[in-house]
Amino acid sequence: MDKFAAIQFYALLKREILEHRNLFIGAPAVLALLILVASIWVASQLDQAEIVSGMEYLAVLFDGLSPFDMAPFFMIVSVPFIMTLYVCCLIYLVNTLFQERKDMSVLFWQSMPVSNFKTVLLKIVTVVVVAPIFYIAIIFALYLVGMIWLTVLGLTNDVDLVGIGWMFLAAVASLFLIYFSAVIASLWLFPTVGWLLLFSAFARKTPLLWAGGVFILLGFLESFIFGSEYLANWAQSRSTNLNQYLIFDFSNVVDKLFNYDMLFGIVLGSILVTGAVYMRRFTD
Image (cartoon, rainbow, N blue to C red; front, side, top):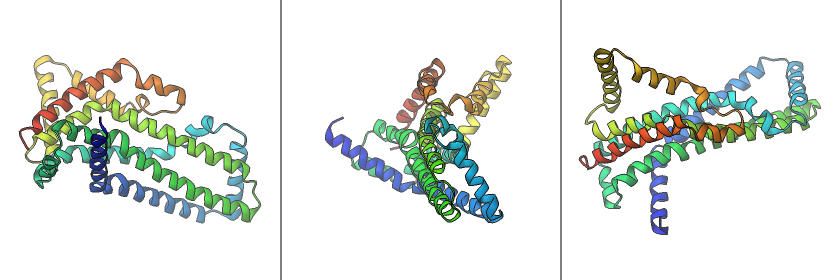
């Protein structure tokens, strides 16, 4: 990719994020605000002695321990953010190519000019690589506000802050686990990414109903003709088995990325993405 192409791709990526900022920035920001408000409310229900006791316990628990060893402790905080990211990406994928035809912004892409392949690739990069970065940044901001709050409480109540500092480092280290989990989840669910993009490029109306309806129809035909439920079972195992893509140990990243199941999903997803690129030729 030459310099001009790189600059063009960056500009288009920036436009994509700004155009869908409610999904990739607004949604996690609102979620973080709700978690912060809920945390303040819970703290307000506790006695001062209970708050100090809890801080002292956390300080002792994390003091001197490796942040990378304690990072999985904070993965529970990431669960609502990861679930929100999945829902927002689903909404984005199923509507992005469809909406461009509906509001005629597809003409913008043609005027650049931007190939169909690059347009679809842009959508994938947005979901797989870029969107998780904004979620990570907002989680970090939430951790930072929490650290400032704990620091103020510690100083006013004469609590040793060394252990709290180690806890914050563990929280920051967990951000890498969260990002790796989000990226690996996108690759693990790449058949879903390709399927949604295919019907986003194909459907004239209600692409989500098309995507869901055709999948159900294929499952029904398989059950009716062959008497099996391989498609439904495969989709269920791939989407509900969180252990396949949630990372709790940095040493597991390579194993999660490089295995036959992951490769099969990427190949299948790539075929579906190719179909989306091909279908978009007829809707420009």
